[in-house]
Length: 466
Image 1: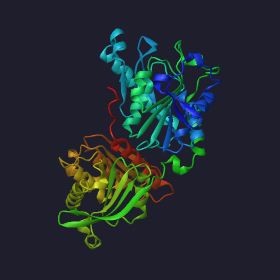
Image 2: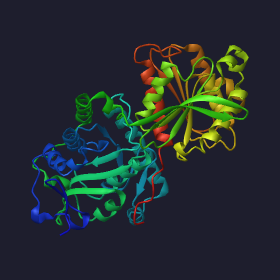
Image 3: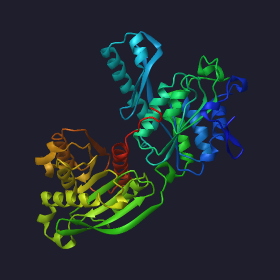
Image 4: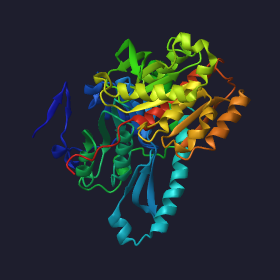
């Protein structure tokens, strides 16, 4: 039997998974998690995030996260059940638009397109509700560039596990490990294609239900999931909870934009999955602590940054330059074209984040037909200054404003009404224009980080072997 060794723990390849001849019931989900963690200790040295499938997978995942000293989060997926026979599933959905449909079951059960759409719409509402409930206002952990261990308490059909794997791929996970205590042998071949590594303790041929392999398989409530996530987060150092501080390279750069050279600061985290150009003008420079804090939040999530001054110090003295949005946008677009050719940028996607009038410049530049910008964020900016071009912006746009900054909030809402593509207005509570209140800038940076992680991460690749 071909078995790979990791210290004293054996990792079974899928072709040699143990069967019921060596099967034993788990005392409960915590017991299953501890046994599973023993098989995963070879991953301790990697940049790991553990994600559990609610509800039952979270207590199992918590034990794995504890043993590996890794942060814990959830990936919320929902089974799509037959309308007239809800105990049977016909697929699953997940965040980021992930959708797995068992076409054979849909065909045999004669489920119409309208019936399927109605079930999916209902489950998507529930999916988003649960995601908010479980995290309790905490930001989703970044998966980009990291080893992600997906954990459930068992697998029967494999549809929810497959959906979870696709969510991880969509969010840019570098390596995907699917870890389950017990599974029916039938979906194993599919799951092997979805994951880079599959760890399963038992695959009994007489599998009937997950619960039969647990002495205690009591239901897990939404509250218990939320408590489990909160308690695990409190045990993990804050730098792990918001993204591991990755090794980075930093340097001052000059970027040509037409006839001028723009000063910038380039930061490249190890394994960067994309870059964000911070378009700065009007006194908000690359040296600003506020901009450096935002950039650091992005860097800790595996995103490279370029803090780019669109005007020289001398040019900013003339305030008309600060409000010359067309000039700023032209320089930003020109600089982006040059940066795409830099080897250090690695041909990775480049998004824009603008503050002050730089936000309008970012939107103006993104409206160009050949812009190829996957995402734009305005952070305390003036997107209303780009209103003549907003209908041409096809990139997803996030507008971040403090709720006490009523004038700029109104201007942002007016600008949002002109956007035609995906967009969102994120309002930071109890914050003024520059987010100077305690925790306000960190909250704004968190909104930006999540937006870029969602939209700059590599798209999921086809499953191996398909």
